[in-house]
Length: 310
Image 1 (cartoon, rainbow, N blue to C red):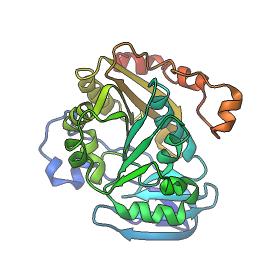
Image 2 (image 1 turned 60 degrees about the horizontal axis):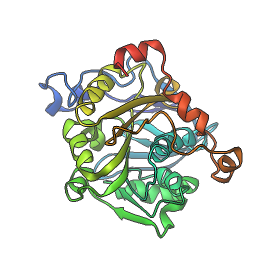
Image 3 (image 1 turned 180 degrees about the vertical axis):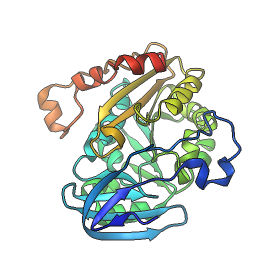
Image 4 (image 1 turned 180 degrees about the horizontal axis):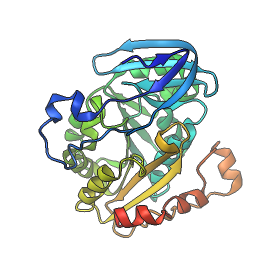
């Protein structure tokens, strides 16, 4: 697919089933669903310069400089982040989870090859170690070169880097992490397994007794069927499940959902364990997240509340 035309990049991801023979005959459940991630629409950015374009063992990786959004990371034709608005997603998927745990000392990030979730996790002084489990080392290397503001924390002494499949890593680590963050792309390519039932089962086993899970929760305007199926499954695993929404301009429909789960039935995920003052928000260099945003993100429009029963 040619994603460049007249100096513009256009995000046109493929149909999941049409491009993957293994998905063609599966039933409609959590592990397979038939839709276009952006059904009937597309998103474009003006390109100033292509900085890198490589095919790794796992996926197509593109980084370009845009006219309005800084450098842009694209995996398999799908925008992962832009320098202009990346903080909106990175802060929410990170701090919703870490401020929902009373004392997160050990954190695991599945994915996160651009380094921005790592950057946000390390803003919590109580965190003693962060493990990044990223399957594609090429994403890490290119991010270090072309996304320096996002990847700056890769030099931290608290970091443990595992370049391997998230499934294999989780099988080897039981009851170990206070918080697990799934920072994945959409369910195509190597990220497809991170939306399966087995994956959420493995995460539960890898969490500590009061562990918290945070995951990107797709767009409720476009992916409601997938979101409903995921919530249906995780509700059988965790006593506390919550769904939040936030704004990310360069994501489909400009909105992103976040799935939060806790193994502690006493945890109200919608209320942060610590309330931040304005000075603390500034000290942590937060641009999107604050304590009011945490609470309000779980106040959902009626159509989402009814569809998800949360």
